[in-house]
Figure (cartoon, each protein chain N blue to C red):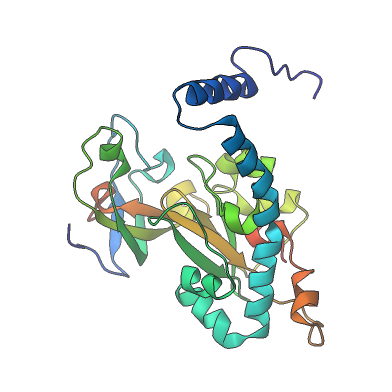
Length: 89
Length: 197
């Protein structure tokens, strides 16, 4: 799966419930962040546990401001998100 | 600890024993293999490894740059590997005057075991995992660490295949120290980011 995002792009973590195992934590869902690195390419855990691994896909380091996540400024949270977890804002 | 009853059916220790027995019965592992692994772990996996890597980075600026560019390749120069299979990536994050990094795994307890040894119990606690992403300064204060107000705290959630190692800032007044002397200053909490060094 090709990369559709680049460093510096703004992205939003999908808000919808993924309905099973996922590595998309609830606290970032629906929030916007900035891609700070393209980390690697790997299988989507949600599909791996379902026995249908699919293709490798890009995993991005996405940085969120605390004001966006918690309504309080002062820190950032950087988390890795598979491309399938992201949408363009 | 008197309230912990490890023989209760739903206790982690009991579940661990049942799992071990089932794996042995299925021929997946033998008790001898498990014992050998547990004996080897403290001998090869310890925060002293992370401290040695940091001391080299403080002493050798070119190594420091290689470490930040490609952690796995740089630590291999010192004979280390992050382990965990080919998918696992090591990312070394450098503290600066502007940014202090602190590591958590909110979904489970991912941790660079080979470089830091078994993780401390607080790292695996629900309280640390839930709170440090939300109020890192409050959590750091409970560890007795108070970064300057102008420093941005960057929390790294190790939720995927990347394992993080924090490269602390070299303390002032350590110019004369050897690499060995520098390594002694580095703590496990410094390598996770819940202390300055």
